[in-house]
Image 1 (cartoon, rainbow, N blue to C red):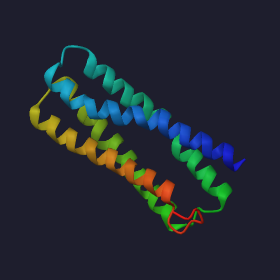
Image 2 (cartoon, rainbow, N blue to C red; image 1 turned 60 degrees about the horizontal axis):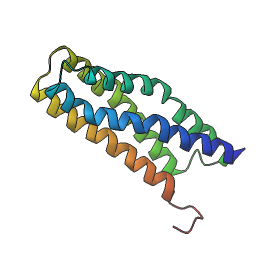
Image 3 (cartoon, one colour; image 1 turned 180 degrees about the horizontal axis):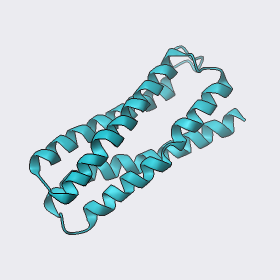
Image 4 (spheres, rainbow, N blue to C red; image 1 turned 90 degrees about the horizontal axis):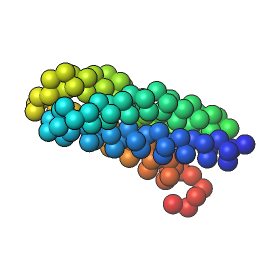
Length: 141
């Protein structure tokens, strides 16, 4: 059962978080340079839709952690905190800024959005490293 949960968790992370990372990274450029092309709206729709579906990632992650008996391990607690931070950044900063830019593309908003998206992607990168390295694990890494 653990292997199944872990597989679904990893696949969900790749399939659901990956597109958000790419679309959110591309959004500021296209919103600023091609505001009427429809591309910014599509990128925002991808971010919003995948964000809702992306809830599956922590759900299966928690189920996997519970099955493995590691919910109290520091590496997992840090990963959970970083995941919450990334989710809040997406929901409270990135998606609203995208809506703002769809209404009126402003260079300063695009720069702030690019920086925020970079932070979002960095949080996920750290989570991935923690999931692979798992400090204190018996994997020998």
